[in-house]
Length: 265
Ligand code: GDP
Image 1 (cartoon, rainbow, N blue to C red):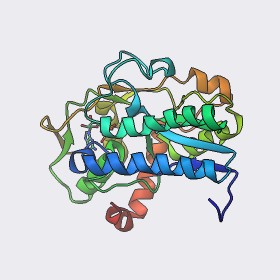
Image 2 (image 1 turned 90 degrees about the horizontal axis):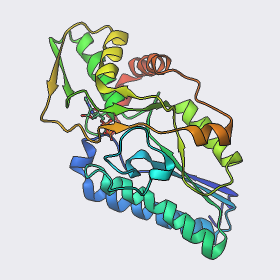
Image 3 (image 1 turned 120 degrees about the horizontal axis):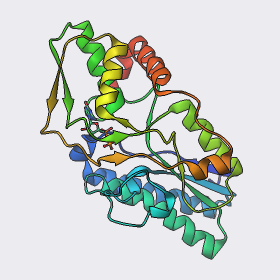
């Protein structure tokens, strides 16, 4: 902070991934995300940064709410136990921002994002979120003419998928236009069930074999879809890339960069 003297800091860094990494590294996820947020905001404050944009997560919402997740409900219940070590640490950034605003007049925003995807995502099976994990599985199954592909859980959970370029645009617009430090959702507002996602990726990769649902694998939170009314009003903007188009671009990128993509964990 002292050397670069930035006016604005956008804190996108996190140690996280799909549902499986959280089974492997629950402690590391807790510690790294907590200290990254706390130290970075403190350094930004000391370094005279004018605006801090914290990137939060839908995992911070209560885990058992009905319907889409509204900002007003952020504190209305316990976080889902499968992601609390991640969701709560990110949520602490919102509290830190609130407290720093009160004591130091520090300007911190908190954006709540959900499942992101696109070129350069992490496709490694231990770390990947569902969307890149399925792309990898179906592309490989097609290449190897595999008889079946394993998919996890019941297929019933509903998730929201935001394409990387839309995400970047949304963050920049929020950094520019959002004045209110209260946490704000940033997403598409569109829910897709895992079963629907599987069908879509299967079709786009041209895989014609069978599916095997592994019910031993966790479903996680059943519904993670954001209410985007406040975002639309504040930013006068909505995401532009449909799930189908985003999937096509991501599949094309993965096929072209498969060797290097498979190594990144
Ligand atoms: P979450 O959004 O934090 O719950 O994490 P994920 O993106 O990893 O998982 C979302 C949902 O997709 C869960 O219900 C998983 O069980 C389901 N799912 C189905 N197949 C897969 C897979 O191959 N990998 C992953 N990571 N999730 C899968």
